[in-house]
Amino acid sequence: MSYTHDQKPQSPSEELFGEIISSYTDAEALEDGFLAELHTGVMFRGLPINRITSHLFDDLKPFVDAEAPMFDGDFDRALASILRTKCSFAAGDPGNTGEIGDIYRIPPKLWLVRNEVGGWTAMFPEDY
Image (tube, rainbow, N blue to C red; front, top):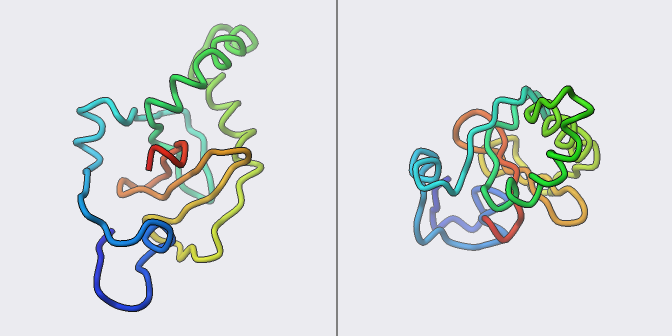
């Protein structure tokens, strides 16, 4: 995502938060442990949910652990089931453009944000 001094925001996230004052690459976020890479196969609007913030992952882990026995103990399949269910409630921001930075909201307070690595990042809004 980039910022210009145009009147029109480049993305819905820019409209919400204003000018970008620093950036954090996907590689840096993975290395720092802020993001985790997902390989659950869950798709949303034709793209994989391939990242999750550690904050959201830690909050979901007890629920995934509780559901895993229904999937023969397979943690990834249990997480995929939870993510698919949550995605069914996602609603897009009116300013979404089909590009990196688009935000879909999942009640009560989750976001899917289109990321730079060809997919979606699942997160809490405060993780943005």
